[in-house]
Image 1 (tube, helix red, strand yellow):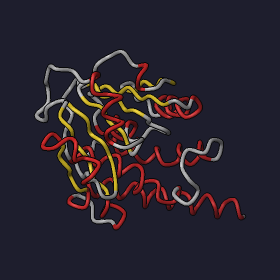
Image 2 (spheres, rainbow, N blue to C red; image 1 turned 90 degrees about the vertical axis):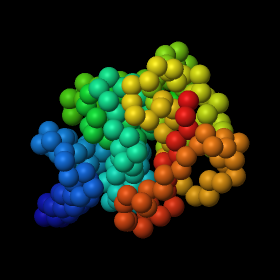
Image 3 (tube, helix red, strand yellow; image 1 turned 120 degrees about the horizontal axis):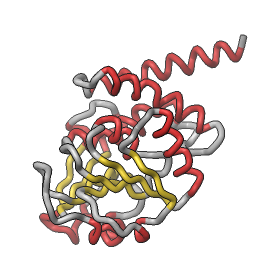
Length: 223
C-alpha cells in the first residue's frame, strides 16, 4: 500500500513537472512531449542508483534542472545540423533537454565522471535520442570544433572560456554568432568584467516567472 502511494505521488510530481515545460514551450510536437514526460521518470529511477541530483532537488527536477536547461532555448533556436558541445554535463544538463528540444542539432556531452556519462548514454538510448553522444572525457581532451559550447555552472566563466575558446567553429549557420551559452547564477559583474562587450547576460526571470529563476541567467560570449 505504501509503495502504491509513493508511486502515485511520484506520478503526480512527474505530471505536474512536465506541465511547466509545456507552459513555456507550447509548440512542442507529440514526440517531444512524450520524451519530456518520460524524462523525469528516467532521472528518478537512475537517481536511486547513482547520485545525479541532490535529494532535496529531485522533487523540483523539472523546474530546477530541465526547465533551467531550456533557458538556452529562449535565447536561440539551433538550426539543422548545428553542433553543440556540452561541457561538464553531469547527468545530462543542459544537453539532454536541449537535444529533445532541437532534434535536428547534434549534441556531444562530456564529463570527467564516467558513471554520470554512462547514465547520459542510457537515458539517450531509452528516449531514442539519436542526436546525443556522451563521452567520459575532460573538455581539454576534445579535439573537434563546434558551433556552440554549453555548460551549467561548471566553474567560473574565465576558466570555462579558457577550456573551450579554441573549440568554436568560425563558419556560421545560426542567427546568433557561434560562441558560448553558459547557465550561471548570482552576481556576474566582476566575473564577466574581463569580457567587456563580448559577453551578454540574458536574465531567465525575463522568460520564466518561478522564484528560482530570479538570480539565474544565460551568459553568451561570442566565439
